Amino acid sequence: MVARYQEFVDEVMARGELDTAEEARAGTVHVVEAVAERVDDRERELLAERLSGKIREAVRWGERDGTGEADTFLEDVAARTGRPVEHARYLVMAVLSELTRQDSELGESLSDQLPAEITALFAAPGGGPPPQRGTAAAEDRPRPLDSDELERALAQLDDWSGDTGRITRTVVLPSDRWPPLLRRVETVQQELSHHAKVDRGSNDDLTFSVRTRSVDAVTELDLELARRIDEAVAQVSSGG
Image (spheres, rainbow, N blue to C red):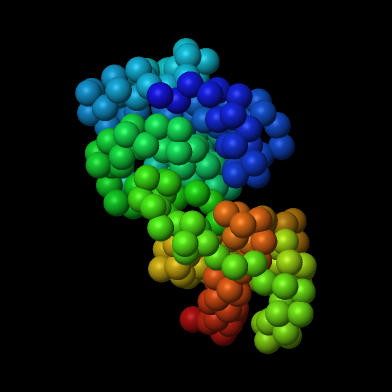
């Protein structure tokens, strides 16, 4: 049962990198509505039954009209929340992973109903398996890098900077090169089951921020993602 409402909202706010509890609450409602449109009636009833009363009462339990396609799902949530798709991804992952953490039976039941492209979003932001699938997660917990290790690694990367808590790179490209770059990065993220936060600037720039949220630090997985982002940038910059 997803009964710990304030804990749920606090976790979504932190994992989804939202500024306020109200944004987390509203975002949770939008994600639940998008999910509810993509499962059958039995699963919708189970979802409504298991949710915290405050969330359940705010959800509009309308007719199903979702297509169940992953891209459409993220675009749907982005449109509902007024956030870019890459930010909507973090919100979705935050909501679904916390829902599963509080009620693993509900998370697993919903995961069985949804296409694989959407169930991949049940993982917590920053990588790692969904909670219900992670009995070995503690044993496989990524190791944070120390300052010396990170300094040596940054020297081998293109224009990345930061500290042991997070590394970032800002890329300046014509806006028409953003879509192919983001598609390449998305492919890499799916392969690694690890995601960067992407912020769009006002001067044809994109800033990639990487850290492993499960340990709140930079790990080797972050370095691998940074290397792969560098490769994608090089390919797109050369016209690939």
